[in-house]
Length: 156
Image (cartoon, rainbow, N blue to C red; front, side, top):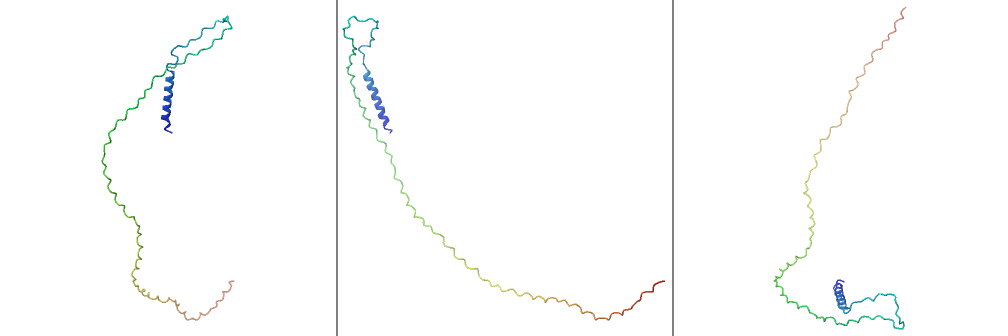
């Protein structure tokens, strides 16, 4: 779509040139004269042919000859200076592909050495439970003899 603009510009320029060349010198031999004013009188001889408009003679003058001037040949530009580019250093060979090695599983730790513990010596046996022994009841003494006391006589 961008290539259409130069073509349109050339076409417009060509149209303007053709228009100017066609208008150049047209009607230069005799200027246009307006007809005489009308006064209202009639010609006396009606049998005369009516006047007709005669166009001015066409201008057949040839336009000035066109001389094509070709553009000058392009001057040979000097070749660009040569810039030496040393070859790139060889790229180092790629490292070998990385292979992931998982760490070895932890070896089971050896059980701790067994230390023999003798059972604790038996605690001294508890003393037998204390049994309360009440003292023997005293031997029964005979009760004291009952002495009857009569009430005192009534006073007079």
